[in-house]
Image 1: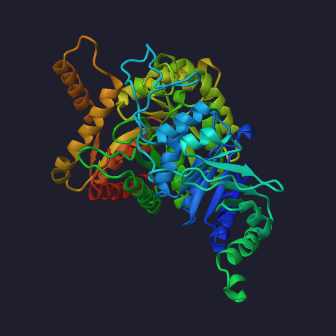
Image 2 (image 1 turned 120 degrees about the vertical axis):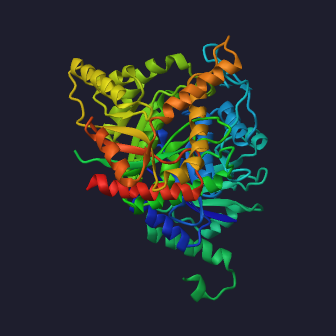
Image 3 (image 1 turned 60 degrees about the horizontal axis):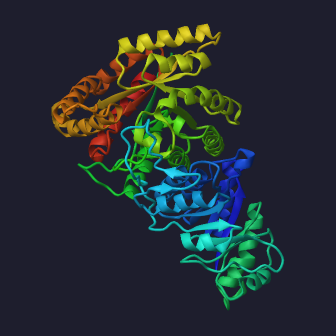
Length: 243
Length: 320
C-alpha cells in the first residue's frame, strides 16, 4: 500500500502554504505529495508546480493534470522536464483527454519514433506548406524514469490497460481500489479524514495507492498518524506510532 | 537608467562534442541557478526548441518551476518561448500559477519560432506564425497583466516587422543577440513609430540578449570556446535557413559558414572592465536588461563557471 498526500488544488495556493503542506507530508511519512491543476478554471501549471515541489521535499511528487486541453506532445515535454529536474520522482494522474490524446502521449513518452494518423491528431502533421519536415518525430529529452507512473482518472479499463496506465477512482462509499494494471497499482482518491479501516476495506485483495486530501498541516499530520503509522509499523510501541 | 544583467540562455543540450545524460544537465542547471543567485544576477534565462537530437529544452515553464523551487530570490525568464506552437490558455495558465508559486519571479519572453519541423510537430503552418502571433499576443498580454502577481512579458524580435507588432501593443522587446547596434537602432525606430501610430505609450526600456564571454586570458580560452560557438551557430543557422531546393551541398555549407562568421563578430569577449564598457553602450540605446549568453550548448563546467563568475564581476560593475 502506498499513501500520497493530495492532490492539493493549485488555485490560489501560495508558495509558503504549499511548502508547509509538502513538508508536513514528509514528516508524516507519506510516499508522495500531489498537486492539482484545473484548466477549466484557468489554473494550469500542474507539472511545473510538481517540478517546483520536488525541489522542496525529497519524496516523490505527483501532478493531477487535465489531458486533451492542449497538444499531447506539449504534455509529454512537460512530463519529461519535470521528471528530469526531480531526478525521476514524478507521477502523473490524467483527467480527461480523448483516446487519441492518451495514445500520442504514451507513445511520445516511450521515446518511439512517432508517426500517428488518427481522426483528431496527425503527428507529425506533414503539412505541405511546412518544408522540410521529417516523416516521424521523437520526444527528446525523454524522462529520467524508463516509465513514468501514470494513472487515468475514472476511465474504462481497456485503453488504460493497453497503454500501461494505472486506473484511478474517486472515493465513494463501498468502492474498491481499481485493479492493478501493468506495473502500477490501482489508485483511489480519498476524502479528507479517511478512516484507515475504510481504506483497508477499499483495498480488498490488492495493494492500492491512496491519495489523501488534507487542507492544513495539522490535517496532514493527523492523516499520517492514522494511516502511515499504524499501517506501516504494526506492533511498534505506541510512543513510536504517535510521533 | 540602471542596467541589470541576466544570465543565459540555457537549453540543456547534450552536444555531440560533450554528450551528457539529461539528468545531469538539469542537475547542472539547478546548480548554475544557485550560482547565479549567489552572484546577484537579475535572473537566469531559458530557451526552447522541440524534437532536436541533442534534447534542447522543450518546456521552459516546467524547468522554471524547478529553478523557482530551488532558489529564493533569483528571477527566471523564458528567452524565448515559441508562442505560435502553444495555446495561449496553456501558456497563461502555466505562467500565472508558477509566477504565484515563484512569488513574482517569473518573466515570459515569447517569439515566433522559425523551424518548420517544430511547427509541423504541433500541426501548425509555419507561414501562419505572424497571424497567430497577432491574435495570441494581445490575449497573453492581458492574462499576464491581470494575473496576481503580474507576469512581465517581453516580445522576442529579430526584425523590424516583429518589433512593429510589439510596438502596436506597447510590449517591451527582447532583442535577438545577432543584431548589431545599427540594426537595433533601426528596429527601435520602427517599434516607436508603430507604438505612436497605435496611440500606445511605449515602455521606457527593453531587454537585449548578447553573447558574452568574460575571461582574463583570451588566448587560453578561445581555442576551447570556438568549437562550442561554432556548434551553436551552425545549429541556429541550419534551422533558420534550410538548403534551397536546387542548392548544392557545398554551396549550402559555404552559406552557413558565412553566417557563422558574421554572427561570431557579435560576441563580446574580454575581461570584466572591457565587457562592462561594451554592455554600457547598449544601455544608452534604451536597453535596461541585458541577458548575457555565456552558456553555448554545453560548455565544459570549469569554462562556464569561470565565465559566469567573471560576469558576476561585470554585473557588480555595471549595476553600481
